[in-house]
Length: 153
Image (tube, rainbow, N blue to C red; front, side, top):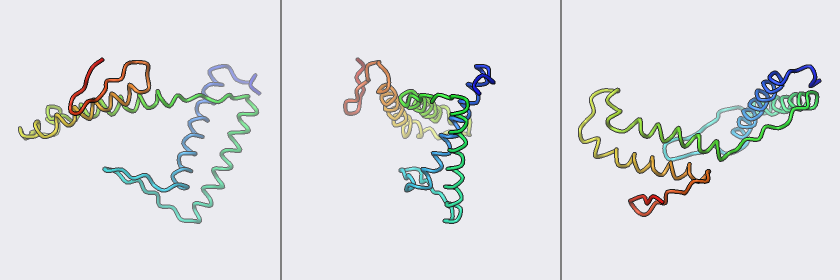
């Protein structure tokens, strides 16, 4: 049935189904594994045993449908480079950290002058550590962390 689609249609359906499958698997993972907890967040999921059963059956049906599409249209898997995904996430985090420095908080109201001394250096350190994580996923030199300072190579 692949002949029924032009290349753009083929790719659009393949990408959409791939994203759908990935999201469904993520939901399945949330239900089947203990919630993830961090320092500033706690993930929870509230679902009854009856709804868990419905969810598992529905996910199986979704997988079956995606498999049929894949077989009927000869869809090939999309390779997802988790390193690039990690770099993207760290880039977003870096920008968010820069956006909460004391100068930028003015957009939310008057900033206490003492705040600059309290948060800017810590946020800069977090931003630099974030760049180190990002650099681990590319061919560039990693900026090593030595104690309280960073050494550029």
